Image (cartoon, rainbow, N blue to C red; front, side, top):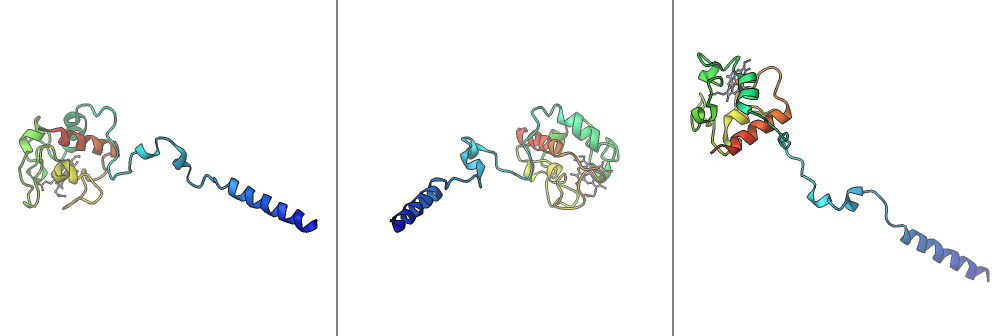
Length: 145
Ligand code: HEC
């Protein structure tokens, strides 16, 4: 009789353990949109509205050094039409192009903004652009035709 009692308790405990197997170690698993969640990338998505990138980011943050006349590295980021003017122009060291329309990752105007620029210093020297500004520059160049 006693044996049977322990047997029942044993089965009950086993059933309890199995029945409560669901833990919330990974709560994302239970969210219906987990699959669609954006994968973290080096550059965050651009802000909903970037505005006029050439004026509000490039001219504002870059033209103090890269002015219309005698800009550092011969680079004029002040005169309007930046993308058209710099498209396919080579950097001073010749290793990259300043702007490749539709391809920010191949454009020094974008790659120089990151933490590890392919050559020289991160732009602008001093306080870097915010992540969302960098994302806006990327979207701007990627959208150029
Ligand atoms: C405080 C001065 C300063 C500011 C502001 C500045 N730059 Fe520069 N920039 C430099 C200097 C110095 C160099 C040359 C050394 C180097 O490449 O790191 C340079 C070089 C560059 C080059 C490479 C040009 C070439 O042909 O080799 C690019 C592209 C560039 N800057 C983009 C930018 C952008 C985009 C901004 C604004 C977001 C910016 N810079 C703001 C000083 C500045």
